[in-house]
Amino acid sequence: MTILRAVKGMNDLFCPELNIWQKVEKTTAEIFSAYGFQEIRTPILEELSLFVRSVGEETDIVGKEMYVLKDRDEKLLSLRPEGTAGVVRAVIENNKVGLDGEMKSFYIGPMFRRERPQKGRLRQFHQIGAEFLGVSEPTVDVEVIAMLHDLLSALGLQNLRLILNTLGQPEERVDYAKALYDYFVLHADNICSDCQRRLQKNTLRILDCKQPHCIKIAEEAPLIQAFLSEESLSHFDEVQAGLSRLAIPYEVSPRLVRGLDYYNRTVFEMVASLGLGSQNAVAAGGRYDGLVKKLGGRDVPAFGFAAGIERIVLLLAEQVDAAPANLLDVVLIYADSVGKEKAFELLYDLRRKNMKADLDHKGRSVKAQMRRADRLGSKTVIVLGEKEVQEQRGQLKLLSTGETLSVSLLGSAIEEALKIS
Ligand code: ATP
Ligand code: MG
Image 1 (cartoon, rainbow, N blue to C red):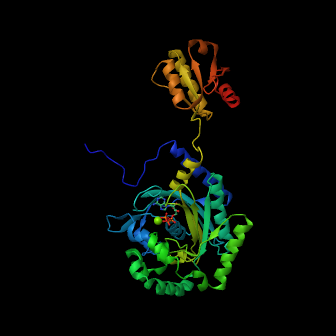
Image 2: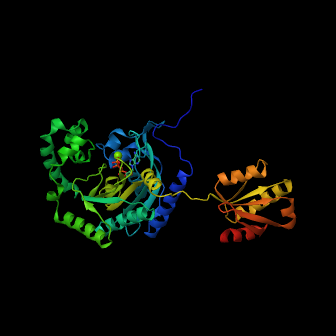
C-alpha cells in the first residue's frame, strides 16, 4: 500500500514543540487585550476575487501562490493567503465598525501560499495579525508597532530589527513609479523575467525582488522621499518621533516596499538578524487607508501587521528552552488491586483540582510504572498499596531528589504538599 503523506510544505505539529506555540498564542491574547484588541475569526476559504482586489493581481501571492478551487456552482474560491482581506470583508459585511468608526481586532490562524518550502517558509503557515481600523493619526502606527514589539520582547526574542519606510499616498506614487520606470527600463536586459513583467505592470514591486542582481540594480534607483507631500513626510516624522519616545529602536530603509498592493504611508518589517537565514522577516505590516473603501466599505483608514508563528517558534526554540520542564505534577503508582482502585479515584479528584496527574492503566510492575513516570517528566509519584489505603497515608516522592514526604490520601492534602515541594 502506498504510504499516505501530508501535503508538501504542510506540517503536522506535536508536543513539546506545540507547547511553544501555545505559549506564543497565550501571550498574544494577553498582550493584545491590554491594548484593547479583540479576537476575530474569519473563514479560511474566501472568494478568489477578494484577494485579487485587495492583495493585488500583480503580486507574487495572487500571481503564483494561491490555492484556488472551483465550487460546484463554478464560483472560484481560494484558501486565504493572508488575513487582512478577510477581516476587512467581514467587518464591512457585518457592519462592525462602531459609531466612532473604530475597530481593533487580532487573529491567529493558518494561511496558505504555494511557495517553495524551506526553513521558515511553508505552504500552510500560521500568522498572528492585528488590524486597527478607523484612525489615520500617526500615533496609531506607533501604538500598533509598540504592541508587536511588546509581544516579541515578552516572548524573549532577541536580535530583532525594526525597519521602517513610507510609501506616501497612491497619487504621490504615480510620479515616483514613472521615475522608477525611467530608471529600470535602462536596465531591462539585466533584471529577472519577473521584474521585466513588473516593469510594465507594477514598477514599485521591483524593489521587493529577492534576486541578488535585481537588488544590486535597485540600489541606484531613485528614492521615494523626493516625491512625497508635506503631509506624508510629516506623518512619517511623527511615527519616528513616537517610536523614539517609547525607546523602540528602528532603522529607516528607503527601499522597503511590501509584497501586497494595499499599503500606503508607513510600512515596516521586523527582521531577525540571526537564526532564520534568508527567511528573516518575522513580521510585517503598515498602513492601508484605501482598502476598506476599495472592498466596498466606507472611507476608513487602517493600520495592521502579520507575524509568522513558525519563524517565531524557530527563533524561540534556538534562543531559550521554551518547553515546560515538568509535564506532570504527580503520577499515582499502585502495587496491587486495592491500590489501583484508590489511585483511580484519587486521580479523578486531583485532576478536578487542576493538577496534572496520571497513572498507568496496564497493571505493570511498580518498577515499570516508576520508569514510565520518569519518562513522562513527572515531578512526583505516590505509591499506593493495601497498607497505604488502610492507613489513608502515602509517601509523596520528589523524582528530582528522591526526597519523600508523608501525605494523607486526599486530593487537597496532596495539592498542599505539591505546592511546598
Ligand atoms: P517573505 O518576504 O518572507 O516572503 P512576505 O513579505 O511574503 O514575507 P507577509 O505577507 O507580509 O510576508 O507576511 C507576514 C509574515 O508572515 C512574514 O514576515 C513571515 O513571518 C510570515 N510568512 C509569510 N509567508 C510565509 C511562509 N510561506 N511560510 C512561513 N511564514 C510566512
Ligand atoms: Mg512572501
